[in-house]
Image (tube, rainbow, N blue to C red; front, side, top):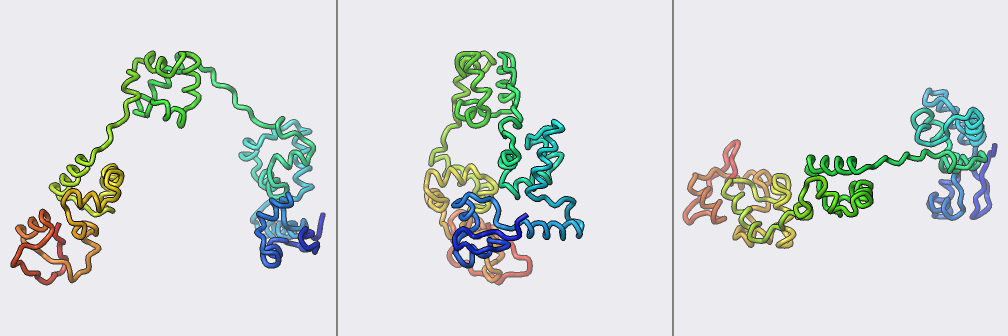
Amino acid sequence: MNDRIQCRLCGRWFINLASHLTLRHKMPPRGYKKRFGVHKLWADSLRLSAGSRAVDRGWGKTIWTDERVLDEIRARHRRKEPLAIAPLRESSLGLVAGAAKCFGSWSKALRAAGLDPSEHRLVAEPRPWSRELVLRGIRARARRKLPLHRRAMVREDRSLLRYADLLFGSWGHAITAAGLQYSKVLRRPPRVSPEDVVERILRRLREGKALNPSAVLVDDNHLYCAARSRFGSWRAALTAAGLPWRNHHKSCRALSPPLRRKAPAQESLHIFVHGSMPRGAGLRPAKRGPACAP
């Protein structure tokens, strides 16, 4: 057990190198580990004392040191217990965590114990794909209305795409064998034109819905994204629809109380359509619980 650890930059000995590297050499601990290939920056005595305090306070059950980790790995190997990391995370998470802290990773701990990590890995059994399984997977995606074009399959289910190519010759032949039209699979939703964006904005205006960006982003995210894609910004889309930005860029709740007012139905409709007050209309003081004009 080492009581101190040596700094490889200046040669001095410390119990913990982390603060020394940061204050004296202005080097982050991660950079020091990467430069010199070390995995810990503290002495074994410091880890043992900290672990003892944790066990005394009831925070842990085992103090993992380098020797204890290696002894436990070798004992499990003699008992012919599995040493793959996946089952050990379920049964002995403390051992895996202690090995990672003492040696950097579970594979490095196995090498330090004299074992080959490649011999203690779980190998997934290959799925017995057949033509019927491929067709069943395609129909299942179609029932769930998931995309079936090739780019989506490469991103989401590459094994199904691979075996469809092997067993049917191509992805299109597999789609046809599943009873689907390949032309509809390739068809993407039509792009929204600028005229459609303007029409949908005016429809929201006629329905009395808010047109500030936050409300549209929550209510109709597709419209907001289409407007930004076609016009560059939501403000430009409102301008193209003939609506002034100053009347719709904020919600009614964001207005200060003195600016709130109760307007008659005719004035509210005029403001809603034209974006301004009719001539000769005066502002009335706000009352308790005012309703903002649409």
